[in-house]
Length: 409
Image (cartoon, rainbow, N blue to C red; front, side):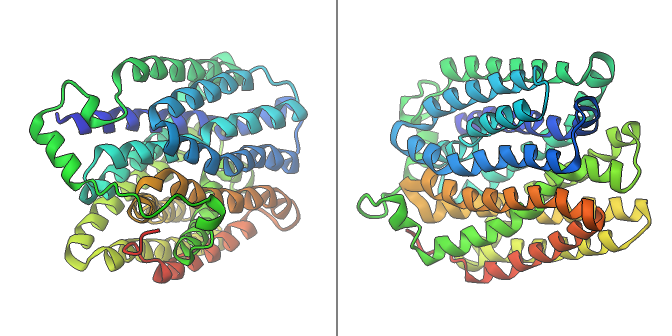
């Protein structure tokens, strides 16, 4: 296995861990809310606290990674979020959960911008979509495995135990990363001369101009459209990451044992969507160039996804609804690797900052939608907010027409 593929594998494992930690909380939602006496509105605020922290600290951790390197930042953030994963299990009420999940979100905010930095240094530019496909596919596999791994632990030992186990797993990953990874391919002793030459010649890691403040970068129209599109995408995808278990149980009457299997389906199909999205995008780039090659796949994906979500909200048949939700997330997630590849395409040596800005926009939108979901579900039923999410996702498809991966910042 080539050295860069080893790096990708280790980062993919981190992506799995990231989503195991994240989705474990929403999977335990029914147990936590019953045991601690939380309302749907309170649960929405707790879920939103993570998303808000994630949004606020994406750009700072991306900037930090650009300056001191992805290796150091990933060590710090994984240790941080692993500690607060464990502390989640010790939470005793609304206020403590609100604070702990906010602090947990600060840690996870550093993961994907710094993974993007590492990939930009270790991969040729023409393999970025494929590399991001593996990373985001792994995240969905982690989310899909969560009900299968976490629910049995929660049923046997209580919901708290699952967070102790997952926090320990993060610490193990940090120890390995510290002693194994090198920031630059040139520092790795076990890389072949041919592979090193290929990476350095094709990674296109140029500095796109003089140093500029993040506020100046945010004035770029191309980045603005990318951020707006990602806000639409994240609004949809965070429903699956936060409210899906509770929606299925409270809105659709699905039991916990049924959720163990059904809850995995959208994420496993989403993993396939991520894999296909990145690979198809790289193929399209070779055929049509970066501008349209990066657009085609997510335009189709988000369009179909929005339709699936709207129809799922309108049907009363649970089986059809679950199938449509699963397909909706699968088509939605072809966007993830393409969007992150575009942030690398237009960002160059600022890949961490640009990807952090993009994800911050998505997370701020996800924060408002996550909190709003609780209010909307309480007042209008659980299907109404899903209908709105479908419309927002379709708007994201049209925004891709304004994004140009050839226009570097």
